[in-house]
Amino acid sequence: MKKREINKIPARLDFLQSATGLILALFIVGHIIFEASILVSDEMMYRVTLMFEGYYFFGERYPGIISFLAAAIGTIFILHAGLAIRKFPASYRDYKTITEHTKRMKHEDSYLWMVQVITGFMMFFIGSVHLYIMFSQPANIGPFASSSRVVDELMGPLYFMLLISVVSHAFIGLYRLALKWGFGEGVDTKKSRARFKILMKSMIALYIIVGLASLAKYTYIGFHHDFSDGVRYQSKTIVVGEH
Ligand code: HEM
Image (cartoon, rainbow, N blue to C red):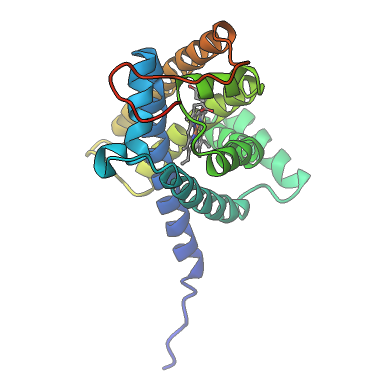
């Protein structure tokens, strides 16, 4: 008897979407923390920047490493978004069916899926702007240079929207991944699901608070430091040029 062919492509694409989503979510978990180094001090943010420029490894700054990282993350970002488009509601009728189902059933997981679609769509645009700037101006990162970008180059409002969308998207995504692949599922699925939901909401709140605090600090520096003369951050202990 002839064996029936099973089309494995949809399953492979699904796996690839989960894998790229996991990489991006973990990247964001680290990113918001590293970038919150500004809350400790200007010097701390400067040192974190030096670390990413490879200074502690090579003894010299290589901002090209940041461009490379931005290109790598950008490629995964595009791949993930491209794979996600398959699941967007294809018509107004599809969209209506989902929203009515969500309302009628008070189904929170369908609601979370809609949040994923909306925040994902927002990030297509605002995430790309930020990634391209990081790729093209890798040497322009530091306590003063970053604050100048937030205030003088008006990136503050964009970062605000990006923060809310990326943090919600990343943690809802991790929650949905855990359910989908059965990670941490105990004997009582209902209980473990509820626990994961509490963890997801707490992480969203925590990361938004930390992100907003960092944004407030960059904005404060941006308004109080005069960049008109182009003088950038100078460390008192490490002399490797200006930032
Ligand atoms: C390798 C790639 C990336 C690098 C090097 C990078 C670096 C930075 C830096 C240095 C800042 C501080 C502000 C500034 O200097 O302009 C910042 C802010 C921010 N980045 Fe990125 N970023 C990268 C990718 C991403 C991606 C992919 C996202 C999300 C899609 C993202 C979301 C954000 C958000 C939301 C803020 C503002 C955070 C806050 O409000 O505290 N970044 N990024």
